[in-house]
Image 1 (tube, helix red, strand yellow):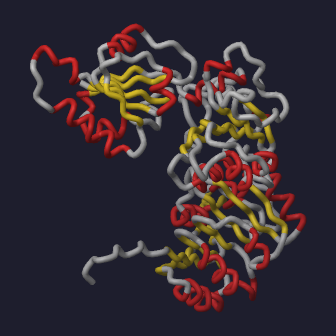
Image 2 (tube, rainbow, N blue to C red):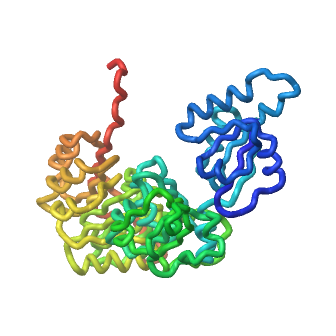
Image 3 (cartoon, helix red, strand yellow):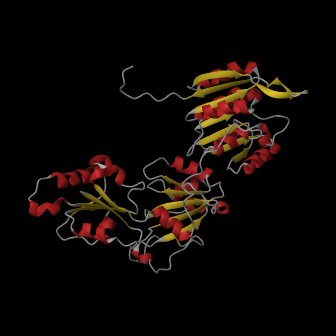
Length: 447
């Protein structure tokens, strides 16, 4: 049997976890956890670094035949931070040894502790791990949602997160060394001001808990060391939502491809809902991804992508269009970053997208499509009314290495006539082309 004990956020161990430690023959954990725990003198200690060597030692300890009198030597304890079942070591242990061989004593997670320090609920927070993962997912979630907890790691800490969010109005709450004994009763920051930035006790090298509010720019300019465990990214105007029933990010919208009347627009210059429905299906906007809406106009596609959880940047060259996009985003309660300028020039300053919708462009359309297709990670969707532009757009998508498909959408809507009868009213036909980046071929696979 393997006992996994969550510790490190200040809460005392329950009696059964203490008993497991007292009878351990092998204890595995980070150096700080081993130093803080009361262990039997006879217990073997392994400092947790790469998982494979530690897991091999665990397997040897639990599988090696021993005399009945020495059976306690089989007892393995793994010490972990906070709740080891929450983005923690429980997953790796269960994959290697089976969940049935684990007894888990969870501690208080760093996310729960960080929100507790601020006096905030976190049932509505989105939690994303950047530990050993690409930071861009965490950045996109922070752009799209008002309350996000980011679990940090080397190269994906407060400085890198702040640099990526420098232009946003979010507040970052950087929680370092949560639950350290030296913080109990100490004069550590509780969330006002940016603090001193010290990561250790004065002259002792001992870590001290810090909970510091900073702007993204301030976070980017700091050296945070290695003690940070979680960063909260907050829109402070929206940190206290209504009472909820389901935890986590808000559920998806009840409907999409909203009617044109639900958006402010000028002279019917808006992507019709039939076209928008197929465009959304080909864009596939989702939590953790970034979508461009180029030539946004009313911003209807941008708003719909944001409602489905994506981080969205809308590019619009007219000032009245920029204000219209912002008004529509506010009316639907979503976050859309609006960039005033003409594509493709302004695109060079934007973070790379996962998907792009292009709804305008005029004679510059092929160049805009080329610029977008070269940078998208997944797909580009183009809506246009002019037949003459279809070949050039298709060539631009194919030349950029995307697999291209398309349709001509012609719909007729039910419309009333005098005498309580109904006719079909045709909408203008629209060409919708989309290019999808093919999956990378695995090396060594026979062609």
